[in-house]
Length: 199
Picture 1 (cartoon, rainbow, N blue to C red):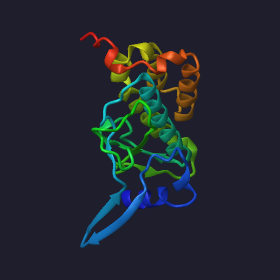
Picture 2: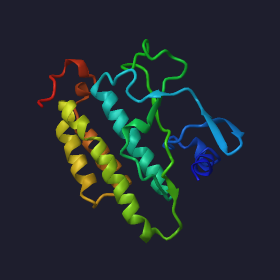
Picture 3: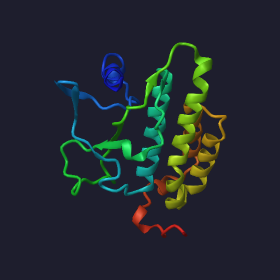
Picture 4: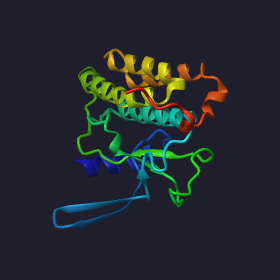
């Protein structure tokens, strides 16, 4: 089921959608009952570490765009809050030398093992989609505490997402509205210059 879903997400016209969170399949190898899927070269989402407030904003934006994309295509992910399933594309760069402050990155989901494409009856999707949004909101909780310059805005987003009243696209639009109120200089703030969160 995971393979079929990944193949669908890697086919036209979905493959080229910039919000598609599934990595491209480079090669499939089958041996007996085992299928090995080869993706492009990816790294853990925070390697190298997020360097600026702008990096955090970009990460949250791409995560929300990916969830909106999945829900638009009637896909319930069921584990969208697991940050360990997010990988980043740095091209052919060495992560130790990659300058995240100046070079854009692309985030992907590499685990679709519990995801499913739901039928056309949208009423029945609500519970699964609301849970995806809640899980995603909870995933942002640590960021809200670590990135104080936008912590209050992230907490507003998290509260909306975990309320059960917001869909993925609603959350994305709220985040974009919150971002428009962030001072431009704040995006350039280095995370290493921020005080440690209070335990």
